[in-house]
Length: 378
Image (tube, rainbow, N blue to C red; front, side, top):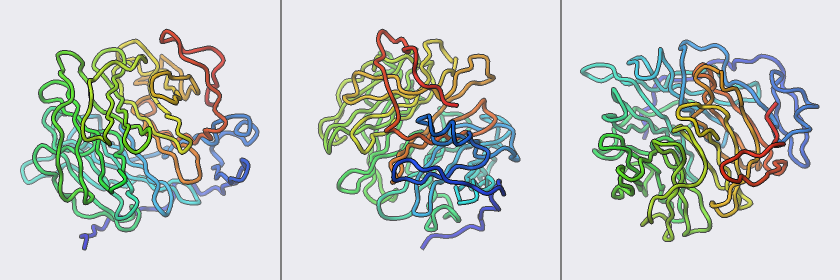
């Protein structure tokens, strides 16, 4: 039995009536604040919106999202600014009337003092409660992993529990659920350089085991992997490096062992990424296609069949002068086949974009150059 806190969501932030747009056999909910229907119909972008416009915190970052039996749920960390002790984990649910007002469901208050929270990760397994992983601590070098669970699709949450020593949980991006029900959690640490590892739980976070570090940070500094599947046994993990570019590493045995960490061959300004394996077998990557360190614009979507050759497919944002840029995406494909992306918009809001992957048109990325003529989100 989970201990339920008195954490409940308020009324949706939008009181305007939604309308529906037809795409083939799918009816897609579009809120009035989104792009006009004629724009949406000519684009792979079905909808684009902010999850909230007003909140009791000025800064936000590191969103995550999941699909529950009752619909989408998103979370992020928010507070005065990153690393401030008042930074907590905030959650919003999508309803037929729009996103609910953000509610703080976790903070870093301990018996000694209050610490900032970091990098929530939502995950809905095939069976069982909704999981919310997050981190607590003064900096990424010395934070620890936490876990909460919800039996009612995110309306109420259990008391938080601290993960075992050395277990961080998924560090930024979602786990994948293997055929035997084990959650393969992509993770990393920063206390001895940027190092990758994987964590495994067969009982939704009650017991754990952990791999050894996969990379030597003297060779490639790498963190925050996402996991892509090429069948039941062949997996690819890709993510962020400390330099300009992304890493990759492959497993041929369902994530039990991993090969050498190498460069992926795409630019990235040492910023968070995320990726998902689509139902049609394609791999979809959301990342900043920028070679300039810490310039988090543009924000892009690329597609691949083999994880080696990537094609440019969509520009979500492109404004190099925007304060703090556009960063730290999260991406999932929902049961209706649509792709949902959330990301940090200028450290001020969390943006949500819905994409019909069947409408994406892509061109090969050659010599790290983003090709001309690729669609830009309205």
